[in-house]
Amino acid sequence: MERPESKILNIAATAAAAVMFFMLSANVCLADARGNTTGGITGLLLLREAAKEFAAAMSKAAEEAVDPPITRREVYRIKPGKKITKKDIKRRGGPGRYFQIYKIQKGDLVYGRIAGRSYKPGGAVKLSDLRYIRTLYYDFDGRIRSGEIIVNRSIAKDTKAVFRELYRTKNQIRKMRLIDDYFTSGKTAVWSAAAAEKADTASMNDDNTSGFNYRMVAGTSTISMHGYGRAIDVNPFENPWCPGGSIYSNQKSSAAYADRSNRRDHMIFADSGITRIFKKHGFRWLGETGTRDYQHFEK
Image 1 (cartoon, helix red, strand yellow):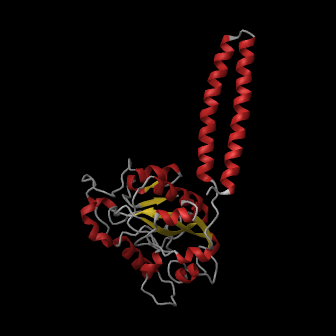
Image 2 (cartoon, rainbow, N blue to C red):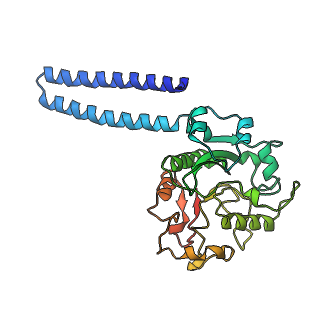
Image 3 (cartoon, rainbow, N blue to C red):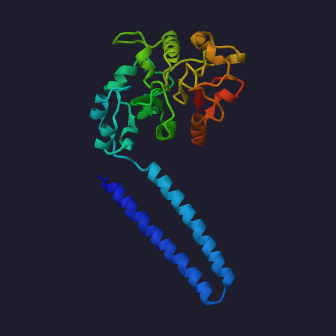
């Protein structure tokens, strides 16, 4: 069933197209009536270009249209990594329903997962600076699954758009869970730099795509871009960090992927679809910098 907002969008689009066509057609006819052949040709060219621009604008509007969010209670029932069927997607009104941005509030389930782990209460990053995003993605076997990620609110909309486009183009992701699932602390956690670093290593070696983790740049006391929620690591096992051309010590299990001349599935390159999509939305890929961090996109 078509949603009401979709019908309104379609009606508006049709009306706008009709008005534009009428106005430009009138100009063409007027030019012809005056015997102005050049004017008529110019009008036709304008009509064609306007039609192209209008079609592009409507396509973008449809892509960016706000979908009614799945309620917070419902989204918590959809476990990250859960296999999602096309029947599930249709029943909920389309894939757009699964791509949503939520604020994180003290006392909710997400806060309970991150407090003292990836999030340091009282640290340089405020809770209000962060957004929890739910997505869909295709795993390495081509199955649709539910994903989650936390990023800075300043890049939340772009992040949502990136993963929606990755889903639409069927770019595959191994798994997509909050990095907090890799912390070994119990229910009550107290943040520590060592624990954050250890969780990061576990997440990378498990090939987990993740975003926010309040941690330092390896070997320094500087807050990393992940610490601000402004970086995303994608399929890190196949795309390790290779500073100076050598594999990062915490990713020795990915050593076979340090050789980027041997292209294999899920490796990221400058001409990869994943890279193009991230760049389209303003992200920078560190795989083409001296850093050689092939998993890392930041904004």
